[in-house]
Amino acid sequence: MESSNDVIKEKGKSLMTLISSIMSITALISVVFGAYFFIDNRYALSETVKKVEQRLDYKIKADQFDNVQAQIWKIEDRYKDLNLMPDTVKEQYRELKSQMEKLRLTIKNFQEKGTQDPDNKI
Image (cartoon, rainbow, N blue to C red; front, side):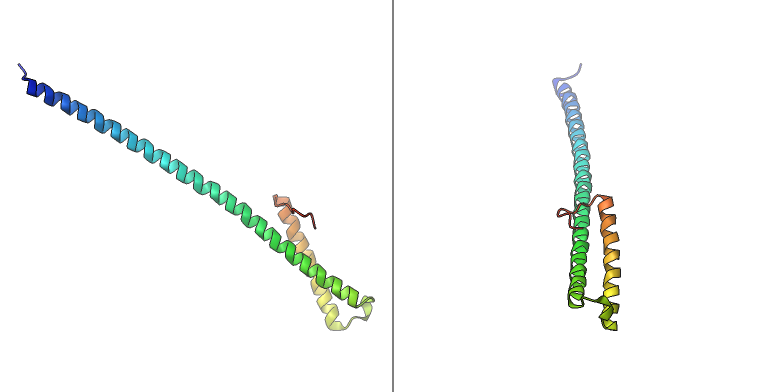
């Protein structure tokens, strides 16, 4: 017959096995949830950063557009008759017009991608 000490040892071993199994499962679940929340947070932040970056790029281009437009208006105000402009000013004027058109297309591309102009300036 088994002694009471042997029975206690057997029950202790099975209890230790049960406790170690529960701890292993708990650790595994913790690792899985931790990985999920890490990945979820990382990619969610990446989308937020991407949107902010797009809005910043849009704002920079809109500001550049405004500056070029202001320079063109200064030239047009200074020289009422555009045919009487000196050659250097004509060259600068044409360059500014070309630059403004490129910026307009860039801004239009931003708007088509979903980046909105909060002021609807352009």
